[in-house]
Image 1 (cartoon, rainbow, N blue to C red):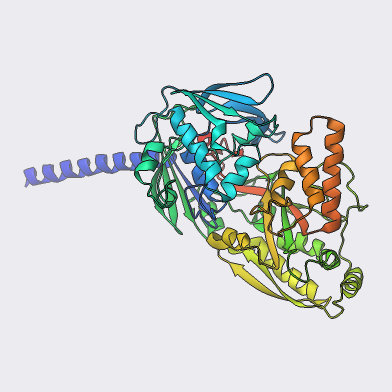
Image 2 (cartoon, rainbow, N blue to C red):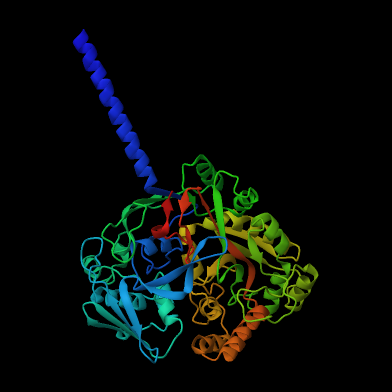
Length: 538
């Protein structure tokens, strides 16, 4: 009996030790794991893919390296932010610029490896750049923004030296090599999974990891969750603190807030404007924090397809601009979490800054008059489309627009497009009215207009707007080195946008990110997604 009692005590002690050790391991694992909740996830891991969603930037940024990146600066409130004025080496350990500014030479880190252990060489860099300019669509347009257009411009000098040659000096070239698209792929791995019909392995890359970035793919269940693990052999920077990151899709805003308030989630990337406004009002006394940064070079807007009647008539577009209930949108859809873009005092820009307010206010009588002049005194029927992934703000905005436009005789139906299909829908260029947003990755007005208004008709020119006069100003400004002429060109195309109004700017968004009070190192990036490398728990 005594022996049995001793055995029981020993087993109990062993169980206690096991439980304590397990609890400690779980606590340690939780400390090294970041759980992020989002409203909508990504539809691809490959930023070169057709119709790739903006959320996919998060995967591409963390799975892949680029030759160079942007520096980081600290804002007055202590928030970290990327510094677009400073280009720093990443996969390249150094780079040089030729005296005429038309050639860039990069020295690749000799100890860099891909996630499968293969060494990274200049041949991989060339294959990756060749792919970006050859597959068409968004990545090819993006590379062209920096005059990166032909495979012949990309030269392998030796295994660890790579050169980019430009047809002429372009101030956007080097910054354009620091954005998400010119990621460096494992060319050997990609070629193994390419086919005759798919020479760039587009199908395989959509769901697989061919990177060498600070994190590698652990598991992805589309529509539910994606997880990343730290790549401990990463050489392009300081090894991140977080060993594992989980991105979980939680469509309902109330559920995301509940997870944050209970401490079950570490960060919330889609903090709705109403929640952000309430949490800011608590002045740090709440259960978690929200960090808000105005999104540079970015606007939420109401677009109109200018190639379709009645929106091919500038008077109709101006009428709709005068019918937008700006103040109601600010109060009831975004709860003051954005800089409204209406009410400019003149029909010409005050300066060359961007974004800036347009000269429209809610004026239904003026809207009715313009409609009548255009031949639509009784209005017409149309549809407004929006991205369900942005429904928290866009759905009430669509309803407010529907109600206001009805007052001038325009009957509006509402189309809700699933987030994963929204970019493809915009590529079709047939959504008469649509709520969308565009944020220029490079903080230059001419870059924004190159994407959003230029007659090349890129995906972000969702209005299919064409103007040779505007194209000429945009093209000239990209290469202009005289500050006075550059300013004149900027003000010229901004004025055209105000008068022609193919899109009505609604507001400059805030990027509101919720986080627990022990989260440190969050950095605002141009792509509006998380860079896991700077984040840690304290």
